[in-house]
Amino acid sequence: MTKTFRDFRYYEILLMIFVVVLLISNLVGPKICAIGPFAISAAQLLFPITYIFGDIFTEVYGYGASRRAIWIAFFAEALLAILGLVAVTAPPHPSWHDQKAFETVFYQYPRMIVASLLAFWCGEFVNSFVMAKMKILTGGRRLWTRTIGSTAAGQAVDTCVVMIVAFAGRTNMSVIVNLILSGYIGKVLYEVLATPLTYLIVNKLKRAEGMDPFDYGTNFNPFATHLHQLRTPNSEPRT
Image (cartoon, helix red, strand yellow):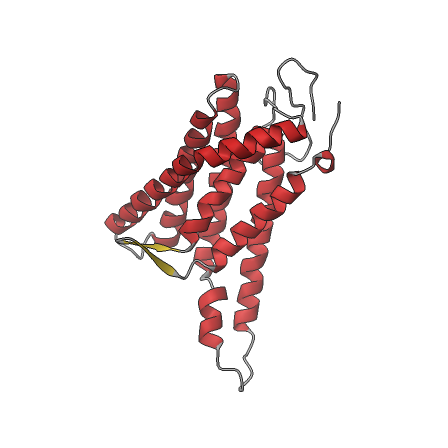
């Protein structure tokens, strides 16, 4: 049985929500929130959700579907950053006095744009790769080991890349290490707390879509464009 992405009932809807959450996390990033004694960026409240979506895409639809979602989200994030720069640099009308507030929301330093895009791309692909491989190793059992394990790997790469690329050479290394550790621990704890919700969504989607793919023989090249065969236990290969 061959399926395209459009044959799935919920894949495209989930993809749209995934992209929207990613874009909003970029826009709300400048706000600093007070969570008890901790001060964190508003982006840290939303961005870890994208890793939950990455787990769902890989677990329910396979690595190929996750790869497609990552690339679409990557280009959407890049487009937002570029258009934000264009809008900010356009000369404001003399009667409009909110340029500074507008810059706070939409302007990102080019170096930060490169750092966030590179970190997202690397982290999400590591997350999806580890998720797919662990599913094979565990025989599809113990979902929690895959969701937490893949996020631990993906967020480690994401956090290190964004902090090093963004701040290396202009910030003390001890500060960078502190930012990496605090950000990483918070993101992984987020995934741990979200595990029951991930279980609920994954199980419902598997029943609704009739899918439980294993990425045997999958081409894990992030740049591959072809669909690959997905095998489910006791069934014919699915695409």
